Image (cartoon, rainbow, N blue to C red; front, side, top):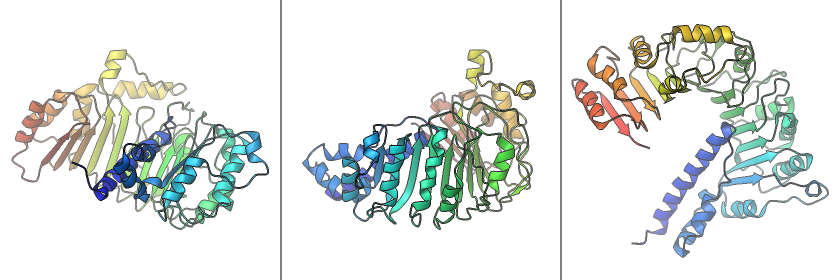
Length: 425
């Protein structure tokens, strides 16, 4: 049975948006991602799908421009130009706000083309809702200064990243920082392999979500960066895969973030001390991409937090056992590594000791983790472990058996408010 065009339009919108979010997530981790062509592919299936795709402007609002092949001749004495598919998408998007991403910007002609498209093309003025710029290396960060000529009045999200190694001496130019300061609706900023070194006293009051890389002399500069975002609600600390750590090791200093509600971080490389962070509304922690839990995990929390949600993502304790050593080398932080490995408890013991110290947790989420039934068994046998837990979410945990999940559900059945959500990928 053929679906109505309006139903197909809803399906197409959800699918294309999902594909774009996947691409954005990969880009934020400096991973290669294919060009978003989902909308074009959908329109080529059949005549009905083509009609549905062309009558759904929302799926054409994502415009991706790859500047890999930008030659020297393209950047000199030529009219404002949009690549064919980008122009096609712009026409089909109608009046929808646009999300534009540039990738592989690594030459003067590429920078000039990007400047022309952003600053001289009238079709884009006041319509760009999200802007993403991917550079080929840190040495090209100076290109971001073109933002001073760009109309930032409609910007809500900005993402900068590059494909090279983290460089302590390269940062976002002050012209770009000041341009972002004049974006009244800017809510989200993402920096991958790029440090935020604010030399001009720029404060972005409107930003509520910050994703920042930990490749610089982490805590010292991170603390300075946080002063630029007084109204943060969500803080995401990312470790990209080619980071070389320095020997700086300082706790996050006394920073006041009165609106901060959640922190996500990657403890595989370093264990952050948040105890001097003044964030009275902080209630959610997400730890991801790690192989061990320690009794010290979440020990140094900000002042007076009410930790209600703990999310463990990509927790793979068996990898240390399989490889026989810690695969995440601390390089110059040998003393820290010795301290960490001497105190951690492997496997279930570390998991239980962490949870036992935080009985206030009401929501526990375990996502895409390689832990088995024995971890759930600890929650079944000990009724005092997370006795205030009301919600347990298990997603994409292939080592869990249905029997163990049902046993846990039965063990907590005395609490009418308890819910267990078990889903697969």
